[in-house]
Length: 481
Image: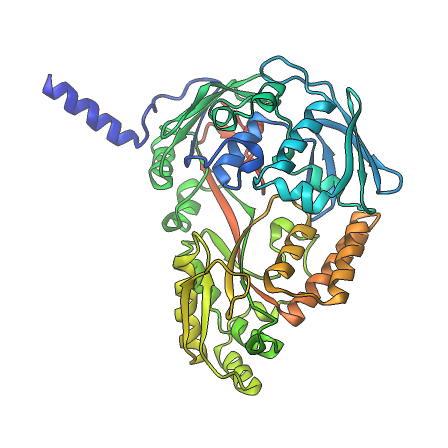
């Protein structure tokens, strides 16, 4: 008996993932981390977005680079004056069989706006609608407080998907997150099992009949794909980034994440009011050391103020403040008469890379730089690191957040931002966003440090893997042979 138990334990250790076994036809096994939540409006982590991206269908997909809108749950999102917007819905039902109507969205958005969730500012600070109502069972009517061409990008946010009437009435958000009911191509069968995962069953336009979601650590999941006991690993540990090219050939993918890191300066503080000082600090940052060190190859050193997931097309010029030039940075501080000494403040989750940043700044610039947890105050006497996770693909969200974080109030910048918001076409908006970005790079109230990216590897029987910034691998589009 003891021998049988030992053999079973050894078999489990070899697979590297509980519940794994021979591949089953039509069943896709996917390794992920434990999602922070499965409540769409309150998630910002890659695992949560991956799962909810299969459970829900958003109104549309919006590509920041091209400005292209691809209708999904919406048949159209239109406006004649950019103040009054009309959203026409395709016929759809929730997984509990109840219809998805315009009122479903109106009631969901009211609940989101009233909450303190990740996606709440999309409605209260970015959309800013004076009225949202159901004009017909399949028609949502919005009236804004100003003309805005950003509505399609905002309404495509994954956090604004509809919730069924049952949870909107009960407000049982925690229970709903354990057994979510969406309107997407897959439903969650049997609820979510923390530490283990869940099973998605196809109910719409998905390629795999069933998707097994297995919670675990990326290193074990990477090895499980190599061993043939897992079909897809949705995160690759930094230690395997080089090896995956040889071990998986063309069976790997990377994509830009809606995440970025910055160093925000308190521009109203006399010691950091001079842009020369801010440029000096920016040139003293060894971004490659951050990427290879505490950020474990899960990011790319910044090459622009806007990360690829949020940028309107390719940037034409170089980003001088994104380079590492210790001698030039030190010279700028000397030129500006910087008295020396600075504390860099960090928020939750950013301590490790902030401390590495300050050690590098001290070495490069020959000034005393220390790291400290940010106090509960809006008036900081030194720079602060920002770990920004975006809720939408609109550059307006990020640019306005960066200005707020640093106290940057330049009138021309904010005018360009307002004009970009009101622009009639994505092309016109993109040009204005680039003007605003260029001004930030010149005045540098914030210095760009890094942009997040995701990686996935998969087994030979897996095909048609594509990824987007907000969902990662699109589970509904992945086939298995």
